[in-house]
Length: 86
Image (cartoon, rainbow, N blue to C red; front, side, top):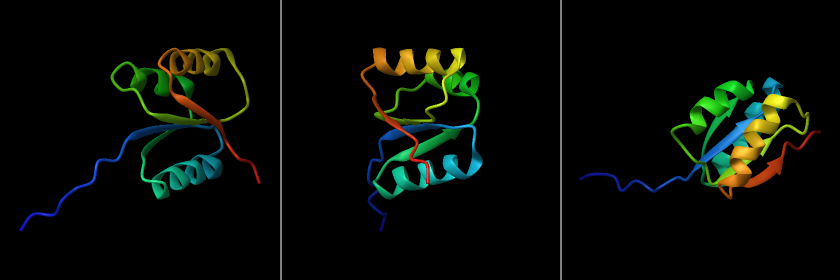
C-alpha cells in the first residue's frame, strides 16, 4: 500500500541570520509549505531561475542584491512577508 503524498507548495526564506532563517523555514513548514532557505541573495536568485515560490519570507535588511530578488518575486506575484524578529 502506498502512502498518499500531499502537495506542499514551494516557499522561499531569505535571511542572513541563521536563527531567523531556521524559524522562518519552520513556520512555513508548519503551515504546509515546502520552504527553501537562503542566506545569500545571489543563491536565492539562482534558485528563482528554475522555480517560483508561492510565498516568500524576507529579511527587512535591504541591499541591492536583495532588491533584485524582491523585484523578481514581485513581478511573479509572489506573496512577500517580512521576517518576524523577536
